[in-house]
Image (cartoon, rainbow, N blue to C red; front, side):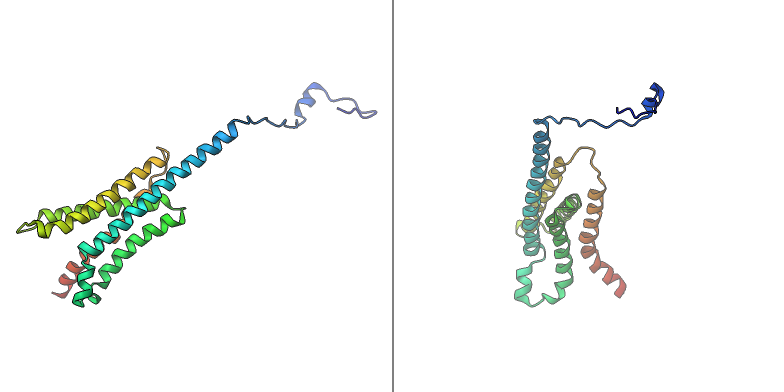
Length: 199
């Protein structure tokens, strides 16, 4: 410390009050790349699960359009216009998931919604197949194909949770699941509600 003329040096108590310049902390050269590699590995895991969910979601959507909504038959019969609301709601639900996954900023919401779609559609199809009367494999196999495709979707969405920390916020998953519930159930319930209102 430079001592100015005619000014006495500070006492020990006053010296403790003088702010000290922080000395730079040496960062271990091996530690920085390790943190970088860990972060890149976590991003790679999320990216891998995102790709799997996108693939299984696309397959599940195509199976629903073909085997549940019978889109090819609607084109041939000319009844496509009457099924537009149901097809539109179905497409919207799946497109929302694909959009959130494509933005790469709402992965947990997209995974939660994909999980909801997979669980709900699988449950619905299995119940419909189980209650078929009279039961025949010719009428049951389309529903089973849709159910299998959505089991794969639900499994891939559930497995994507392993890419996040165990104590990660579960709220986006719950919001996504509830959103899927609304988009999936409304088309199923809407025809019955319309029939009740017409009576």
